[in-house]
Image (cartoon, rainbow, N blue to C red):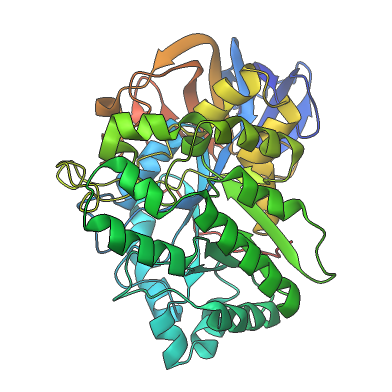
Length: 455
């Protein structure tokens, strides 16, 4: 196949370049102007399209197996490709069994592989329960197959997936370092959140109560502690879904040699404020919660500067029933976001002038591939790399309608928002897996990917 006549986005470039791409056996084999097609070459005309490297969504909860009333790999990965995402990394704690050892990993892999429209990786995880039972062997059994190990400083699933205190967190960092792996942390201070929640639940049921139980300070305390512990342990830690700019700013502080830290944020923190949460209610309930309005532009600035390395969706839809009712404590947390992540970043980030083209490519594709050890294959458009591409119509605005989502989750805080640039086609390893006129194609085409190294 030759992708012709498109304006192509290359890593490190701040302007699109008109180039043709020749694809063969799932990879990009040649880049040039006016490439000559052989008699058997399929031509994909990309006129009027921007051609981008496929988005990488390094934080999704597809709930499969176990909680497939919320989402499954077929619907979640279909939603991903509809938004130009070609690789996802699925979290370990929201499937049954959770991914904690080689047996549970293989069981999950067998179930989700026939459903996947995208290439995908897994994170492993360590709960307090697993730690107390002895986690070294289980971590070692999957360290070469997972992108890292997820842990919680405070957990909403305490009975089945308990949070780690500071001592246990340090020990997991040390074990992971010995295995050459990363520890991912949900960073909210447990003492603050648990006690504030108990008090507020006695007297308030409104969305603001959820925020007051988990304010900016809860993230700042947790990130401060985590970075200090990582510096002592010489660990490799990544802070997931940072919603507080002050907490993200801590990632820029000088670190002790041998300690690697990084962080991600999500579109929802860049797009919305506490006022939106109060207005929308459970549709916008997430953890950590949406913060005050001054926070948004500060997060954009930290993303632009590189303090925050990349963006992830934290896709975790709840059912309509779980999102209904007026008791915010009983509503489920999470939104369907993988299908809007890249369009939001392109429209409200790059086109709005908040991000240069090169920086947009880093936060949407390149940096996650680098961090989790598969940039040798994915994350940019270059010869020898997988032909993971998204073609975006440069002339079309479109409006988000949750009922049109390919995810099982149809509720979205982005309902009614208009973006510029619509995904026309998504290719994974040279095969079209989404066409706007035909929908998601090729379930089962997606392959399981492992890290070659992390940074």
